[in-house]
Length: 245
Length: 110
Length: 113
Image 1 (cartoon, chains in turn green, purple, blue):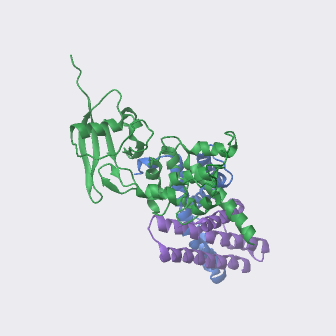
Image 2: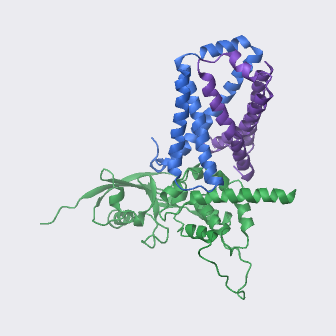
Image 3: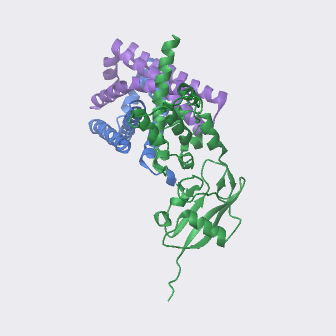
């Protein structure tokens, strides 16, 4: 005898930048099933026009983040069993980013902020120079290691209420990236990065609400990284003041 | 909205106030027993340079600290920007400073 | 209702810090005005103090002391996080700040009544 399929109630946000609303779908439950599986099932079986983003499906590419029951999550590695509440799941596009269509957001502000925070490697060497040896046990290198596994999923950006309140704010991911570069011996423009994160939308706007660190799927700690930037920028400011005087 | 300079002022005034607030709380706990009277307060403060410096510093620091705090809330919650935001910051700071200075002077000069 | 992504310790600590800061900033002008009455209208100041001698006002004063205490101890936690790189046990530290504030303002209330 075939066991009866249990179905869950999934409401998915449908719409574009201007208007939209939640539509409900009945999705059959599986033993092992992620939120991304659920969204894909709806697209394959209920409505092929449902738009969403994904690529690797194994938590490496950072494409598939969405709001799941009000919390930003990487959907490919979020199991239904972990988040199912009263047999229901609510899936929405990431907060703090404009919606393009359905679950796909316009991530320009998020990625532009990486550059605004100096998040590129600044080199002063050529291909003819010896490769510098970096001791992995150095304290500064350990700080870098703690922050470099960011996959640009924008979960922290969606979780942050300083981002919601201040449209110039660079956000946790970009500032976390800046902090890894400030601690990177190979980066040739560390004072320049400190200047970039000291402006109007810089690290000093952070209120240490900690939602970034609470929800980062890779368990990074952007809040502590931003605290590090605040400290270094103050040191930079004070030493600059001394040399100016 | 908060640059390095405003952040520095906010934290600096916080550090200046930390011992003052603890002192203020201690005075309140000490003074509240048996109710407050004007004579009791003024006995402590009138003509006392020490209290005048204590509360004078407090007022100066809190005016800056609170003005920056009000600025943040005005921007993040009320979405106020630009010149209006600067105006709110300055008005908050100046009003607190003037009223606070007047209060410190009052209990010192009484 | 508080949104799901905000339901965690450090956000609640932030909320408490912001609300206490705002209420203290709003209270300060009143506080300053009453104190300056000692110079301009000493009788009014005395009647203000007499008015404060009832349990409702005492309770309000207790709330103000709590707001001040929770703002300073919560603030010291943030300063330690930002300037001293003291980043382990932030949730415990945030909860402790509230506990100390309850304790301090509790002593004030017990002495006031």
